[in-house]
Image 1 (tube, rainbow, N blue to C red):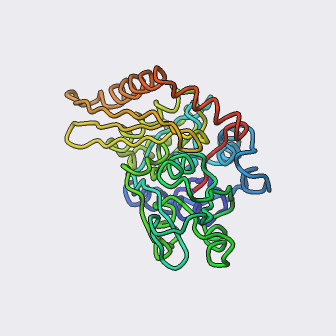
Image 2 (cartoon, helix red, strand yellow):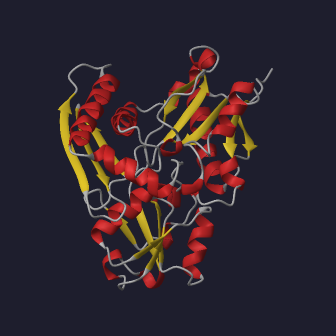
Length: 324
């Protein structure tokens, strides 16, 4: 008798369903377990408010978590950068899949690169992190808040309402819109959001080591190590996903390199840190990554990074989840 498919909860957007289907296919390929998608609408999907006005982080994930805790779905797939750093009671991040390109991308009219945009050009982004770092590079541009899915945002460029938008490269790749990319920001220019490009698989803690233990088949140690360091920075700064905090870690051949930046939203002041550590003992990756994130965050706090985060919270309102 064929086993009933496991139910994977996902938001209804094209990006969410595409990335959830990719994870589902990877799980089935590695374990043979059939997966079906359960489409769920979150408050973040239906509200008309700008994301900087939404109270609390996790506006895109809470509906999925409610369904998990109610037992209506077996597991959920999230964009990791949308997840609050505080663990949810009763739920476990059972897998973090191999990361896609974490960089940010510019989609501009007339194929223009960032350096070629004329002074006063209007750039759309819903992310204070992006605004802060871009304003540090080009204070002469006009940065405006936007929301909506990738197609909606790109349409504002096509219509002439905006000169350009900035989105996650990985998200554009997932929805087949890389042809719209006119420039890509290297980490030396703009550090990505902690966890950007990675997908998280979350399930009830009570089932993570039991009937859903097969989900660990898609966990990627290098990605989990890197994003643990990045998300620890965010947690130590007590910053929501909306904070102007960029972090990027790379884990290769037992070396973990972490770069982080906290930048004022007008680009006028920044605190930046970088460090590399060696992981000598297999199995200690997560602990060492967390220690590295804590140490770097404390150094940044000593230089006033926490004050920048607090000032941004006052400017933009309560923290929220950074959209693609």
